[in-house]
Amino acid sequence: MSDPGDTARGPWAALREELVQAGFRPSRRLGQNFLLDENLLRAIVRDAGVEPGARVLEVGPGLGFLTRHLLTAGARVTAVEIDPRLAERTETVFANTPGFDLVRGDVLASKHTFAPAVLARIAPPEPWHLVANLPYAVSGPVLAIAASLPHPPSTMTVLVQLELAQRIVASAGGDDWGPLSIRLQVAYAARIVRRVPPELFWPRPQVDSALVRLDVRADPLPPVERVRLSALVERLFQRRRQRLARVLGEIAGRGTAGREWAVQAGLTGDERAEDLPLETLRRLAGLGPGLPAP
Ligand code: SAM
Image (tube, rainbow, N blue to C red; front, side, top):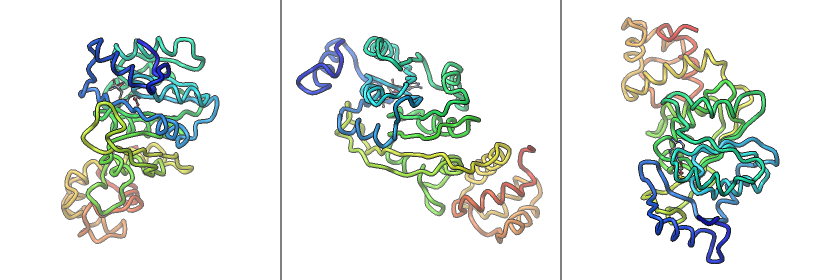
Protein backbone atom coordinates (compact mmCIF):
# COMPACT_ATOMS: atom_id res chain seq x y z
CA MET A 1 0.00 0.00 0.00
CA SER A 2 1.23 3.49 -0.73
CA ASP A 3 1.68 6.24 1.77
CA PRO A 4 -1.15 8.84 1.97
CA GLY A 5 1.33 11.66 1.53
CA ASP A 6 2.56 10.35 -1.82
CA THR A 7 -0.15 11.20 -4.24
CA ALA A 8 -0.55 14.39 -6.21
CA ARG A 9 -4.36 13.98 -6.29
CA GLY A 10 -4.67 14.78 -2.64
CA PRO A 11 -3.34 12.94 0.30
CA TRP A 12 -5.92 10.21 0.39
CA ALA A 13 -7.84 9.77 -2.89
CA ALA A 14 -5.42 7.28 -4.46
CA LEU A 15 -5.00 5.46 -1.21
CA ARG A 16 -8.74 5.04 -0.79
CA GLU A 17 -9.00 3.66 -4.30
CA GLU A 18 -6.17 1.26 -3.64
CA LEU A 19 -7.72 0.08 -0.38
CA VAL A 20 -11.12 -0.49 -1.95
CA GLN A 21 -9.50 -2.35 -4.87
CA ALA A 22 -7.66 -4.52 -2.38
CA GLY A 23 -11.01 -5.44 -0.81
CA PHE A 24 -10.76 -3.19 2.25
CA ARG A 25 -14.14 -2.12 3.64
CA PRO A 26 -14.13 0.18 6.67
CA SER A 27 -15.69 -1.54 9.65
CA ARG A 28 -18.66 0.19 11.25
CA ARG A 29 -18.31 -1.94 14.36
CA LEU A 30 -14.77 -0.62 14.85
CA GLY A 31 -15.88 2.97 14.22
CA GLN A 32 -13.68 3.30 11.15
CA ASN A 33 -14.40 6.81 9.89
CA PHE A 34 -11.10 8.17 8.65
CA LEU A 35 -10.45 11.87 8.85
CA LEU A 36 -9.40 13.13 5.45
CA ASP A 37 -8.99 16.86 5.82
CA GLU A 38 -5.34 17.88 6.05
CA ASN A 39 -6.14 21.33 7.43
CA LEU A 40 -8.24 19.85 10.17
CA LEU A 41 -5.62 17.24 11.02
CA ARG A 42 -3.08 20.03 11.35
CA ALA A 43 -5.50 22.06 13.46
CA ILE A 44 -6.11 19.12 15.81
CA VAL A 45 -2.39 18.81 16.52
CA ARG A 46 -2.25 22.58 17.10
CA ASP A 47 -5.32 22.49 19.36
CA ALA A 48 -3.72 19.65 21.30
CA GLY A 49 -0.69 21.89 21.93
CA VAL A 50 1.70 19.02 21.21
CA GLU A 51 5.26 20.07 21.96
CA PRO A 52 8.35 18.40 20.45
CA GLY A 53 9.24 15.36 22.55
CA ALA A 54 5.79 15.09 24.16
CA ARG A 55 4.52 11.58 24.90
CA VAL A 56 1.22 10.98 23.10
CA LEU A 57 -1.15 8.02 23.17
CA GLU A 58 -3.22 7.74 20.00
CA VAL A 59 -6.08 5.24 20.15
CA GLY A 60 -6.89 3.97 16.65
CA PRO A 61 -4.32 5.36 14.19
CA GLY A 62 -6.31 3.79 11.35
CA LEU A 63 -4.55 4.78 8.15
CA GLY A 64 -2.10 6.95 10.08
CA PHE A 65 -3.33 10.35 8.93
CA LEU A 66 -3.38 11.95 12.38
CA THR A 67 -0.32 9.95 13.44
CA ARG A 68 1.71 11.54 10.65
CA HIS A 69 0.87 15.06 11.84
CA LEU A 70 1.62 14.19 15.46
CA LEU A 71 5.02 12.80 14.47
CA THR A 72 5.72 15.83 12.29
CA ALA A 73 5.07 18.03 15.34
CA GLY A 74 7.80 16.06 17.12
CA ALA A 75 5.59 13.95 19.41
CA ARG A 76 6.62 10.48 20.52
CA VAL A 77 3.52 8.52 19.60
CA THR A 78 2.28 5.22 20.95
CA ALA A 79 -0.54 4.17 18.63
CA VAL A 80 -2.93 1.35 19.57
CA GLU A 81 -4.76 -0.34 16.70
CA ILE A 82 -7.16 -3.25 16.97
CA ASP A 83 -7.57 -3.96 13.24
CA PRO A 84 -4.66 -6.14 12.07
CA ARG A 85 -4.98 -4.86 8.47
CA LEU A 86 -4.48 -1.28 9.63
CA ALA A 87 -1.89 -2.13 12.26
CA GLU A 88 0.19 -3.80 9.55
CA ARG A 89 -0.06 -0.79 7.31
CA THR A 90 0.66 1.78 9.99
CA GLU A 91 3.67 -0.19 11.15
CA THR A 92 5.04 -0.38 7.62
CA VAL A 93 4.49 3.32 6.88
CA PHE A 94 6.10 4.56 10.09
CA ALA A 95 8.66 1.79 10.54
CA ASN A 96 11.60 4.17 10.15
CA THR A 97 10.06 7.21 11.78
CA PRO A 98 11.70 8.09 15.10
CA GLY A 99 9.29 8.35 18.00
CA PHE A 100 6.71 5.89 16.62
CA ASP A 101 5.58 2.87 18.57
CA LEU A 102 2.64 0.56 17.83
CA VAL A 103 0.60 -1.60 20.16
CA ARG A 104 -1.46 -4.16 18.27
CA GLY A 105 -4.81 -5.05 19.80
CA ASP A 106 -7.68 -3.65 21.82
CA VAL A 107 -6.87 -0.56 23.90
CA LEU A 108 -9.22 -1.97 26.55
CA ALA A 109 -8.55 -5.06 28.65
CA SER A 110 -12.07 -4.64 30.06
CA LYS A 111 -14.71 -1.92 30.37
CA HIS A 112 -12.73 -0.57 33.31
CA THR A 113 -9.06 -0.78 32.34
CA PHE A 114 -6.56 -0.36 29.52
CA ALA A 115 -4.59 -3.26 28.12
CA PRO A 116 -1.36 -3.93 30.08
CA ALA A 117 0.82 -3.05 27.06
CA VAL A 118 -0.87 0.36 26.93
CA LEU A 119 -0.52 0.96 30.67
CA ALA A 120 3.20 0.16 30.41
CA ARG A 121 3.66 2.94 27.80
CA ILE A 122 1.96 5.63 29.90
CA ALA A 123 3.44 4.69 33.26
CA PRO A 124 4.67 7.46 35.60
CA PRO A 125 6.56 9.68 35.99
CA GLU A 126 6.57 11.12 32.46
CA PRO A 127 3.55 13.29 31.61
CA TRP A 128 1.49 12.11 28.66
CA HIS A 129 -1.33 13.28 26.40
CA LEU A 130 -4.22 11.50 24.72
CA VAL A 131 -4.82 12.70 21.15
CA ALA A 132 -7.19 10.69 18.98
CA ASN A 133 -10.07 10.46 16.59
CA LEU A 134 -11.76 7.98 18.89
CA PRO A 135 -13.74 4.97 17.69
CA TYR A 136 -17.38 5.51 18.69
CA ALA A 137 -17.94 2.27 20.61
CA VAL A 138 -15.14 2.88 23.11
CA SER A 139 -14.97 6.70 23.30
CA GLY A 140 -16.72 7.02 26.68
CA PRO A 141 -14.82 4.17 28.39
CA VAL A 142 -11.44 5.36 27.04
CA LEU A 143 -11.98 8.87 28.43
CA ALA A 144 -13.36 7.67 31.76
CA ILE A 145 -10.54 5.16 32.26
CA ALA A 146 -7.84 7.67 31.30
CA ALA A 147 -9.25 10.27 33.70
CA SER A 148 -9.31 7.87 36.63
CA LEU A 149 -5.78 6.49 36.23
CA PRO A 150 -3.35 7.16 39.10
CA HIS A 151 -1.19 8.89 36.44
CA PRO A 152 -3.81 10.50 34.18
CA PRO A 153 -3.04 12.37 30.95
CA SER A 154 -2.21 16.08 31.31
CA THR A 155 -4.47 16.80 28.38
CA MET A 156 -6.93 14.88 26.22
CA THR A 157 -7.75 16.23 22.77
CA VAL A 158 -10.25 13.94 21.14
CA LEU A 159 -12.60 13.89 18.20
CA VAL A 160 -15.89 12.31 19.24
CA GLN A 161 -19.52 12.30 18.15
CA LEU A 162 -21.14 15.65 18.90
CA GLU A 163 -23.68 14.05 21.22
CA LEU A 164 -20.85 12.65 23.37
CA ALA A 165 -18.98 15.97 23.26
CA GLN A 166 -22.09 17.65 24.64
CA ARG A 167 -22.24 15.14 27.50
CA ILE A 168 -18.57 15.73 28.29
CA VAL A 169 -18.93 19.52 28.61
CA ALA A 170 -22.51 19.54 30.04
CA SER A 171 -23.62 21.55 33.06
CA ALA A 172 -26.11 20.50 35.73
CA GLY A 173 -29.77 20.72 34.83
CA GLY A 174 -29.80 19.33 31.32
CA ASP A 175 -30.29 15.87 29.86
CA ASP A 176 -26.59 15.68 28.94
CA TRP A 177 -25.41 16.04 32.56
CA GLY A 178 -24.60 12.60 33.91
CA PRO A 179 -21.95 10.20 35.23
CA LEU A 180 -19.52 10.76 32.34
CA SER A 181 -19.67 14.58 32.59
CA ILE A 182 -19.11 14.37 36.33
CA ARG A 183 -16.28 11.80 36.23
CA LEU A 184 -14.43 13.89 33.66
CA GLN A 185 -15.13 17.36 35.03
CA VAL A 186 -14.06 16.44 38.53
CA ALA A 187 -10.57 15.94 37.12
CA TYR A 188 -10.52 18.12 33.99
CA ALA A 189 -11.65 21.46 32.58
CA ALA A 190 -13.46 20.51 29.37
CA ARG A 191 -14.43 22.52 26.30
CA ILE A 192 -15.54 21.94 22.73
CA VAL A 193 -12.87 23.43 20.48
CA ARG A 194 -14.56 22.93 17.11
CA ARG A 195 -17.41 21.11 15.38
CA VAL A 196 -16.57 18.82 12.48
CA PRO A 197 -19.09 18.00 9.73
CA PRO A 198 -19.57 14.44 8.37
CA GLU A 199 -18.21 15.20 4.90
CA LEU A 200 -14.64 15.40 6.20
CA PHE A 201 -14.61 11.65 6.91
CA TRP A 202 -14.48 8.49 4.84
CA PRO A 203 -16.93 6.91 5.04
CA ARG A 204 -19.27 9.71 6.15
CA PRO A 205 -20.78 9.17 9.58
CA GLN A 206 -24.46 10.01 10.01
CA VAL A 207 -23.82 12.58 12.71
CA ASP A 208 -21.67 15.62 13.38
CA SER A 209 -18.50 15.27 15.40
CA ALA A 210 -16.65 17.65 17.68
CA LEU A 211 -13.13 18.12 18.92
CA VAL A 212 -13.01 18.31 22.72
CA ARG A 213 -10.04 19.38 24.79
CA LEU A 214 -9.69 18.44 28.44
CA ASP A 215 -7.01 19.99 30.68
CA VAL A 216 -6.20 18.33 33.97
CA ARG A 217 -7.16 20.37 37.04
CA ALA A 218 -4.49 21.52 39.43
CA ASP A 219 -6.56 20.30 42.43
CA PRO A 220 -7.88 16.84 41.51
CA LEU A 221 -9.96 14.92 44.08
CA PRO A 222 -8.00 12.43 46.16
CA PRO A 223 -8.66 8.86 44.86
CA VAL A 224 -10.76 7.90 47.89
CA GLU A 225 -13.14 10.82 47.36
CA ARG A 226 -13.28 10.13 43.65
CA VAL A 227 -14.36 6.53 44.23
CA ARG A 228 -17.10 7.66 46.62
CA LEU A 229 -18.32 10.34 44.22
CA SER A 230 -18.33 7.90 41.33
CA ALA A 231 -20.33 5.33 43.31
CA LEU A 232 -22.86 7.94 44.42
CA VAL A 233 -23.31 9.41 40.96
CA GLU A 234 -23.81 5.96 39.42
CA ARG A 235 -26.66 5.24 41.82
CA LEU A 236 -28.24 8.71 41.74
CA PHE A 237 -28.36 9.00 37.98
CA GLN A 238 -30.10 5.65 37.56
CA ARG A 239 -33.06 7.60 39.03
CA ARG A 240 -32.05 11.05 37.89
CA ARG A 241 -35.57 12.58 38.05
CA GLN A 242 -36.67 11.14 41.39
CA ARG A 243 -36.65 13.10 44.61
CA LEU A 244 -33.22 13.00 46.14
CA ALA A 245 -34.34 12.09 49.70
CA ARG A 246 -35.91 8.89 48.44
CA VAL A 247 -32.95 7.74 46.34
CA LEU A 248 -30.46 8.65 49.07
CA GLY A 249 -32.60 6.74 51.58
CA GLU A 250 -32.33 3.63 49.40
CA ILE A 251 -28.57 4.04 49.07
CA ALA A 252 -28.24 4.50 52.85
CA GLY A 253 -30.43 1.45 53.45
CA ARG A 254 -32.87 3.39 55.69
CA GLY A 255 -35.64 5.59 54.26
CA THR A 256 -35.41 8.46 56.74
CA ALA A 257 -31.63 8.71 56.40
CA GLY A 258 -32.07 10.07 52.89
CA ARG A 259 -33.55 13.40 53.95
CA GLU A 260 -31.06 13.75 56.83
CA TRP A 261 -28.20 13.15 54.39
CA ALA A 262 -29.57 15.78 51.99
CA VAL A 263 -30.13 18.33 54.78
CA GLN A 264 -26.60 17.87 56.07
CA ALA A 265 -25.39 18.76 52.58
CA GLY A 266 -27.48 21.97 52.63
CA LEU A 267 -30.35 20.61 50.50
CA THR A 268 -34.02 19.94 51.23
CA GLY A 269 -34.17 16.45 49.74
CA ASP A 270 -36.81 17.49 47.21
CA GLU A 271 -34.20 18.19 44.53
CA ARG A 272 -33.47 15.83 41.62
CA ALA A 273 -30.04 14.37 40.89
CA GLU A 274 -29.91 15.79 37.38
CA ASP A 275 -30.12 19.35 38.75
CA LEU A 276 -27.22 19.04 41.19
CA PRO A 277 -23.92 20.70 40.24
CA LEU A 278 -20.55 19.10 40.84
CA GLU A 279 -19.84 20.93 44.11
CA THR A 280 -23.11 19.71 45.65
CA LEU A 281 -22.51 16.15 44.51
CA ARG A 282 -19.05 16.27 46.04
CA ARG A 283 -20.54 17.48 49.32
CA LEU A 284 -23.11 14.68 49.30
CA ALA A 285 -20.46 12.06 48.53
CA GLY A 286 -18.31 13.34 51.39
CA LEU A 287 -21.20 12.78 53.83
CA GLY A 288 -22.60 9.57 52.40
CA PRO A 289 -23.32 6.82 54.93
CA GLY A 290 -24.07 4.14 52.33
CA LEU A 291 -21.02 4.56 50.10
CA PRO A 292 -17.93 2.37 49.75
CA ALA A 293 -15.63 2.80 52.72
CA PRO A 294 -12.21 4.32 51.95
N1 SAM B 1 -7.02 8.01 13.48
C1 SAM B 1 -7.63 7.63 12.22
C2 SAM B 1 -8.16 8.85 11.53
O1 SAM B 1 -8.35 9.87 12.20
O2 SAM B 1 -8.39 8.79 10.34
C3 SAM B 1 -8.74 6.58 12.41
C4 SAM B 1 -9.81 6.92 13.41
S1 SAM B 1 -11.16 5.79 13.34
C5 SAM B 1 -12.46 6.86 13.96
C6 SAM B 1 -10.96 4.75 14.74
C7 SAM B 1 -9.81 3.76 14.70
O3 SAM B 1 -9.79 3.04 15.94
C8 SAM B 1 -9.91 2.68 13.63
O4 SAM B 1 -8.66 2.55 13.01
C9 SAM B 1 -10.27 1.39 14.37
O5 SAM B 1 -9.83 0.23 13.74
C10 SAM B 1 -9.61 1.64 15.70
N2 SAM B 1 -10.23 0.97 16.85
C11 SAM B 1 -11.54 0.66 17.04
N3 SAM B 1 -11.74 0.09 18.22
C12 SAM B 1 -10.52 0.01 18.83
C13 SAM B 1 -10.08 -0.51 20.08
N4 SAM B 1 -10.94 -1.04 20.97
N5 SAM B 1 -8.75 -0.46 20.37
C14 SAM B 1 -7.87 0.08 19.47
N6 SAM B 1 -8.23 0.58 18.26
C15 SAM B 1 -9.55 0.56 17.96
